[in-house]
Length: 134
Image 1 (cartoon, rainbow, N blue to C red):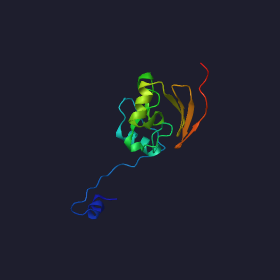
Image 2: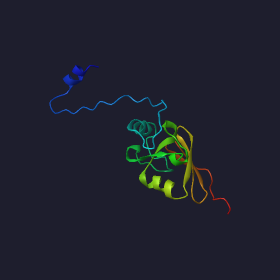
Image 3: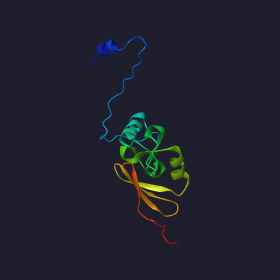
Image 4: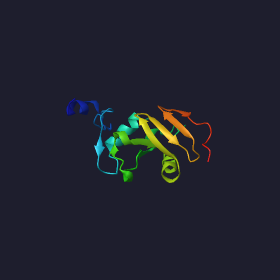
């Protein structure tokens, strides 16, 4: 569409924001630790909620987390980013909670007590009912 057409649609006080189309299947990558806006937006659109088990906080209110930590060699790219709300991001970073991305929308979580849980497309299921013997 032309600039003139957009201008015609806008009335005096209208505010218009034009954003590029993001291909949700494309693989984007950067060498930097800081996640560029385009990757943040792609992550939020492909993962609508926090990836932590049973959490339903919308991705728009979450941090964008490196599944494999950047400091441990994890890339800043489409396949290594996921939304975690601040509470669960801190739990993953500062406690013994760990997780792996098993496919584009599934995560295997391990609790500090040895429980294993799968969060898959918004639903959570417990894989181990009891912690392993010490």
